[in-house]
View 1: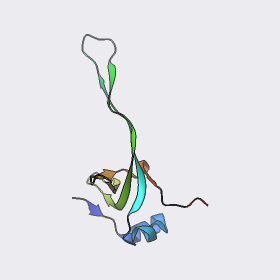
View 2 (view 1 turned 180 degrees about the vertical axis):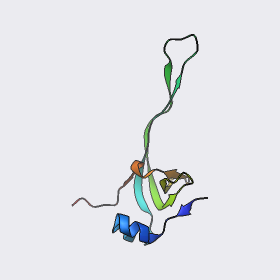
View 3 (view 1 turned 120 degrees about the vertical axis):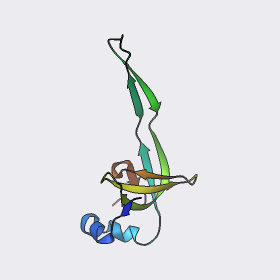
View 4 (view 1 turned 135 degrees about the vertical axis):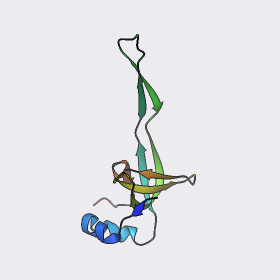
Length: 101
């Protein structure tokens, strides 16, 4: 279970981003999933090997809200086109609805 942050906190820290989120509209975004690797070494080897578990990828999605996990970190809740939902760290979310000024 996650705790939803109250808008006052976000208004103080994110400014007008709250206005976009409080309208009830989902924000389009791109989520970056970094490459995951695993290091393994046998006892009789001098050096180990690095194995790629999952390659880095970017996926288009729709941002719902911010939550705080049990670990105290902030996460964004993002829904993807296939209907799956993921909890994502803020540094991996790029919003695409901003106009370049």
